[in-house]
Image 1 (tube, rainbow, N blue to C red):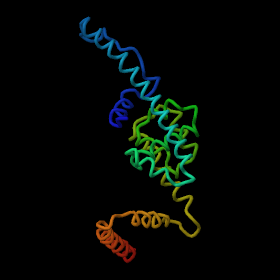
Image 2 (tube, rainbow, N blue to C red; image 1 turned 60 degrees about the vertical axis):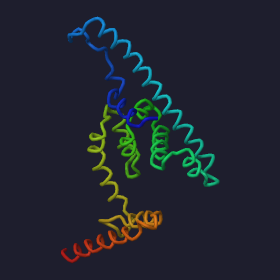
Image 3 (spheres, rainbow, N blue to C red; image 1 turned 135 degrees about the vertical axis):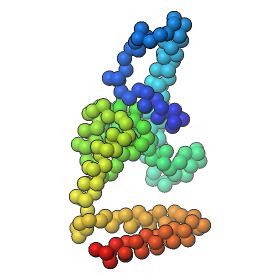
Image 4 (spheres, rainbow, N blue to C red; image 1 turned 45 degrees about the vertical axis):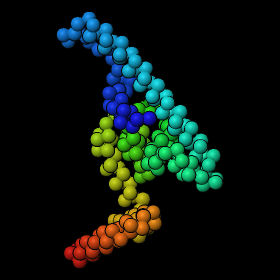
Length: 208
């Protein structure tokens, strides 16, 4: 699936409630132009509907493949053999899991852009916060981010481990995992930036 094309469709058609008849009479269009637009509109809308159905099937199939291959830890090897990236696979599965949790909002979930899905499936969001977006006609990533980022930050602080009031030390573990995946040629640069980062933190400690 062409991600850019899919995202363009999502912008054009954001929800069923926004689809209405185009008022040709309000514009200076001749009969040939009106006939051309009407015919191509049918093709466009039918293609869009097929794309949404195809996306649903793709996510469903991928989830089943993951479940089947998980016991042998061969899922990554499988999707890499098909030319799929970790990020694209992650978004497909996030979209599917979001659908499983909110099945009454199937059309919306399979109309959202990849970026919107990433925000809506953030692990620091609560059920009610995601539902608040799905219940309303909010599709633009900018609006979703604006509404949910404060909740994400608030929840991060509320669920910090005992003894951690201001910072989430789990980030260190994430940094460690990332360092283990680095190519040999990138490790020195990573160490250099990490050392500089630590120096900046130390300066901050001294200034407080």
